[in-house]
Amino acid sequence: MDKIQVSELNRACQLYLNLRLKEAYPLFRRFFDQLPVRPQKEHADYFGQFIRVLYELGREDELSFYRNTLENLYRDTATTEIGYQLGMSYLTSDEIQVKTAKRIFEKLIEKPVDHDLLAKIKMGLATCHDFLAHDWGVCTSIINSIEEKDLSPYLLDLVSVWKAKNLRDAGLLKEAEAHLGTLLSRVSAQFHWHAYFSAKIILGGVYLKQGRFERLLDLVSEVKAYCAQNPLRTIQRQIDYLAEQIKGEPQRSRIELVNSQRQRILSYEGKTIPLHGEQPWEKLLLLFLQDRIAPKTEIIKHLYHRKYRHKSDDKIIYAHIHSLKKNLLKLGLSEKTIVKEPVGYRWLPDVTFVEELPK
Image (cartoon, rainbow, N blue to C red):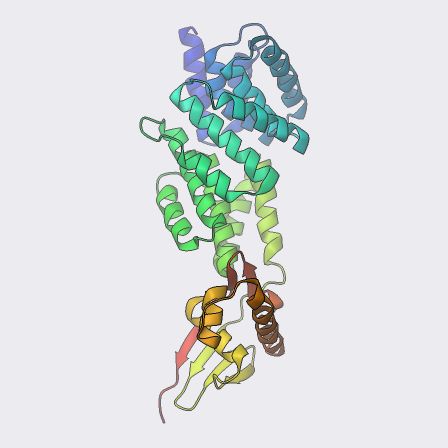
């Protein structure tokens, strides 16, 4: 590349990171117009950003053109750089082409390749597994195999986003939130917007699982404000999904557990339930209020003082959860107050604990 091209690409990259996508577009476009006749290594270096610009700006026809061009080039050359770009172009298409992208990335990952490009290929492969099967275990294995030493800061941020997502999907919500806090301290909407908003979306998912709806509403409002002023189709779609999940969820009104000398009382919107701790559903409720998440093993231990017997105990646990939900409905709470997790159940909304002083 000549000095003018290097300067333009550096400028385009900076504009991209600063969320100035419309200004970055013509600079990227000028360089990628050379792709059909003179493909260069640098095309692979910047393709992830360029295709993101095209997608966010809604330039579907151009996406289709570059996809077709890359198909022809890959058929003729089968180089790693062209294969990576083709696979990335398929990720903006339908399920069939995502499966094709997965096959391409799986081939490329076995080839000797540049350190940064290998990290990009692995993240592309993880995207395929996430889209096709929502398999956080496989995604975690792929992302953890990325060697972070000497990786560019831009890619380190994207790897960090993936690690937070995998923690969230594994149910490790506190760990995911801590990881996101570190990431969000070094990126912003004006500096590496893709990492910033991706982190915000993942954090929104953490808040949703924790039942921290007021924080989630604040996050949705913040991100929507940016989407209203900038062409962010991907982020808009994801934040709209999160906003939709809030509807009908238990929120706003405060749930209180009042502890007095005589008994405990759970209250919500003027209604109360006395808790004597004698019924199984009461014991289960107190377990949830103490720990928020209750694995099946812990539920059986708490109620029956024995070990969990796998599937033979699942019906028993379900019956107790059903009984608890029936009592919570009497209080005016939603059935979604308690949700199923891979290894047990989770209590979602925040509860205020009130100690009633003796009279």
